[in-house]
Image (cartoon, rainbow, N blue to C red):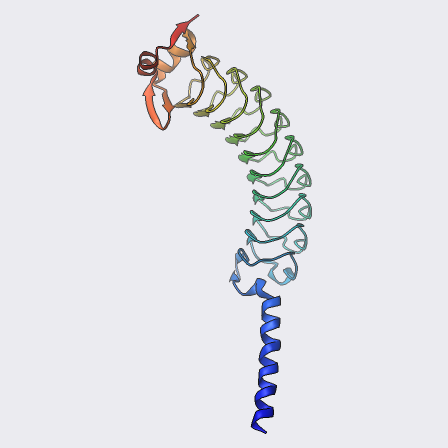
Length: 282
């Protein structure tokens, strides 16, 4: 009798273990009834069974195996959504998240920026380390302040015309060969164009509030096109074949004490020019 009882217990235990493993996505739930649900690092393959968490404002689903954005329609109060390090190929299933302010879907397989038209309260968008080829689909995100698109396959700066509140734009590690179409970004303070194919500093005249400019690892030979940037504080320009600097730019950088960063070391323009035998030209 005892042996039979033990067998029954063993079977029940095995069923429980199998059930537990199959639903292991819930084994690491961090849930705060008023604001947060964290389901990161759970080997999730799909998003489901979240309707009962309709009051949350933050949802973490990073570092899983999710292929499709779905099952979020009832989360009408959601403001922060993190879907980083998954296997997502398309931006979809977000149309009902009208209050969303922060969306991070970096390190996935996304090829196109789409499905964001209704997210008019968005402040931060991170889509770096994907397979995006074109900047598009952002026209309705007029409140956007932070945009990260580094490490994609972007060849041209475009599609930013409505983002007048943007203060940080990260476009490093793409295939951009020209600085252009930035004239509407009147509140931009940080611009990162490291590791592209840029040969000339241009197209920055309208960026009156720009403070930090990253142009490392390009093919720039002349420092120019910065004379209108009265608020510039830092220029990062390592690993470029710099041979000269335009006199207007030199005078501005001298007057404003702009720091030039070379391999994480900072120099004032006068010292940088002298140390590297840079020609001052008209």
